[in-house]
Image 1 (cartoon, rainbow over the protein chains, first blue to last red):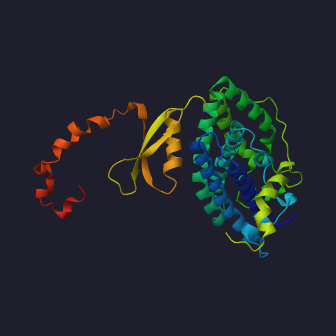
Image 2 (image 1 turned 90 degrees about the horizontal axis):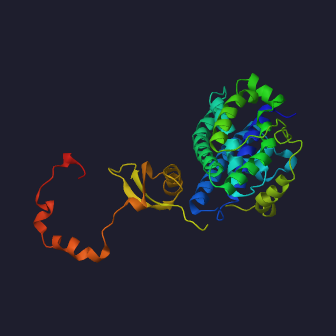
Image 3 (image 1 turned 30 degrees about the vertical axis):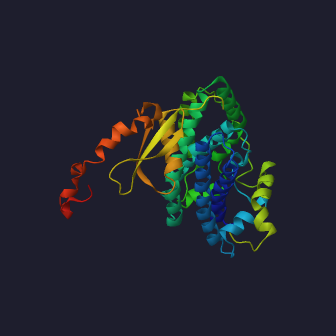
Length: 251
Length: 94
């Protein structure tokens, strides 16, 4: 295994990069102009966070690669994002549910990282946390509005929750990288974030009149990079097309 | 969408502004969502420090056809303008 700090930073940057790209796919086609702008804002926040995480990853790696190199010149098996964030957008409710499940994790995760023994990581976490808190407020309110809305919106939100639930558990799985980060005082044990996440998710989904699936089964293989879903390659093909086809392009 | 969500008017107080100013309008299902939408639609470039949203239906507006009787009588009464006073610098913006 390569340097655990590098792996850890890739996980952070790949989560925000892949989710940011997914949300950007709504630009221009969201159900209302207000939601369109809000989603584009969230996408831009996440891409901004990616620049910081992957920038630091490149620095830590010390192999002369840049954040852009890491984003645009790696292939599926090199990515370390959660399976949750690479799942297709589906309908608007599905996108918002995916966002909510991630935001509810990201807030306590960044809150813990905010006290990291590494100042560079603590700094990125502090800046990202303010954005994540707003994302959570927005996704939470929208989940409640749609879940406790009409019969159709409730049905769609329940379908989204049922579909995405097996991808939530991976956020709390621990491996060698997490152990190394925990021991060096950088990150919390992911399993320790579960109680806060459960609390947010149960309260919100309760208010949204949605039923949490009765299953702990967790799909895994995203953050380790061992087994991404078939969707990631298609996303990368779109996202990486330009810099791969025109390697000298500047924008 | 067959039914449009309610319209809200958005007022923002800028960084150095003394009062909230009308900046535009948007659609939202409820007041909380209107506030979130206003944040995303109207403060992306660091425009504000405070937001108000008001249901557009709650605003009573003067009618354009009454423009004459409403506003023209003030035109020739220059003595009502406070331009005949010297305002000390210490007072600041009025």
